[in-house]
Image 1 (tube, rainbow, N blue to C red):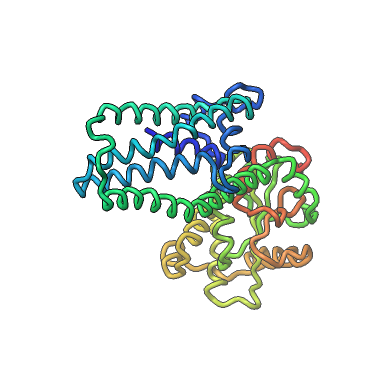
Image 2: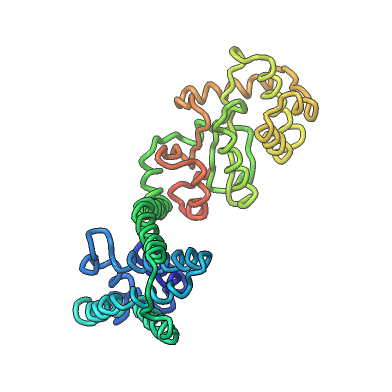
Length: 365
């Protein structure tokens, strides 16, 4: 029980919320009980980085470790005796803790008070074994008992900085996520990014609702490694919002510098769109990004037919890409604005519901 409460006290120091602390500890600075305020106060530190919460962890862990060592050594009688002796100095520490909470911090820490109760209960339980108390102690017993506590202290002093760093980084990461998921900040970044008129990149390869005011353009290349993630993100969005978004798809394909496999793949994708529709086109593109196995893909969909109309469509796309300096893939354009580079493309779903309702990014044909 003591070890559990000591861990709960440490959670308060590291800023970790739990159902236990929420039930017993206040979070408002005006409340009479506030575990975090008491535990994290610098006034309660025994040394610069060692406070009462650390003392609790070391004490209860060391106590359990010593009990284990002395039990397997058949020295439980000496353990009871030594435990009672070591609890005597704990009394002034508990009194100091109560004084500190009452007069200095002027707030109560229920977890700290429960730890104090556990210590006094332990003293009371050992007093029932009074026949064993103050007997002659063996040096071996004292050494094992002290070894349990010293080992606990050394281990804790060693690992605590790493634990603190981990939770510090985790907290910073959560703050960063909350910061980056703020739509107002995302909107500012998007409006500040390069403007590319939708009409200058409008493609014949469209997926979704043609009347949707929110139009998202992607410039992609099946052989681009980063395009796989971008395609999955946009494919998931189209499945979730088929009537609220129009996805405008463009290939960055130059037939003059492409090998045969690339030509057959691009031509077949375009032809699939006109032969079987947008859904079959997206499924074929999705299968390619999933496996990137050219032979398997050709065996399922066949090779594209080299013809003038398909070549014309792809040539127009590469020319428009170059005119807008869209030479990298994947490039995502929201309405008339290039997706901001400070945001990962996988973060787009976090803002999509707001973008759908924000007429600042609507494009009405």
